[in-house]
Structure formats: structure tokens, C-alpha cells
Image (cartoon, rainbow, N blue to C red; front, side, top):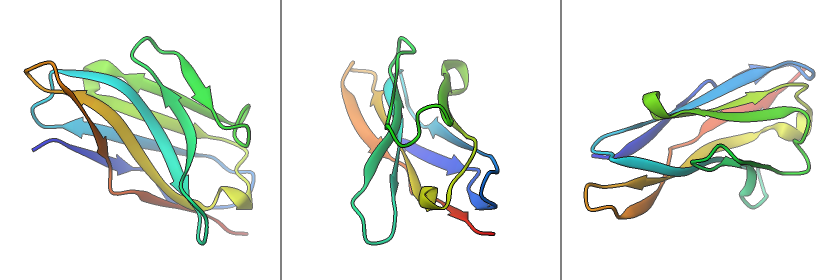
Length: 120
């Protein structure tokens, strides 16, 4: 069974840092674009950052210069390094990835989400 498993969320003070990880597991024969999204209470889910198979990255304006997305293809893992965190970064962060099966077909998967809470 293919799945994405996130880790690294938690409670942090404003100005602090957290590193999120998302590992893909199961029968995976290739990984395309991977990304992080977040959903704050009462708001719609929004893109935080994405990275394609070539390593090209896209960031939401709200996190540019503070967050860094990266991937380790050998480990089938995508990371989100979050620095200079602000209260408005509080949200459930979810991993998303395009994963290929042995037929060369990609499907889009979501992780279960990990909570990031900013509190002084």
C-alpha cells in the first residue's frame, strides 16, 4: 500500500525553526513532483512549497526566504525546513506527491498531516 508519512510537527515559539519530513512507502517506481500544503483553522488549504523531479522549487509568497523545500530521491523523502516561524504559520501541514507505479502511471497522494503550532 502506497502512503506518505509526515513527521516533525510540534509546538514552537515565534522565531524558531522546525523541519518537516515526508517519506513515501510502498510499491513506488518513481516520484514526480512533491510538495507541502497547509490549512489553518477556518481557512482553505494552500500551497506552501513544491519541488519537481528536477529539483525546481516553487514557494508561496508568505514563506519565501524563510522556508526551504528539498528532497532525497534515494530515501523517497521530501523535507520542509521552516525558519523564522511566525504565528500565522500555525496550521496542519500536509505532504503531497505524484508517485508512479510499475505501469508508469502516476497517482497523486496525500499524507495525513502534521500540526505545527506557534505559541509564545
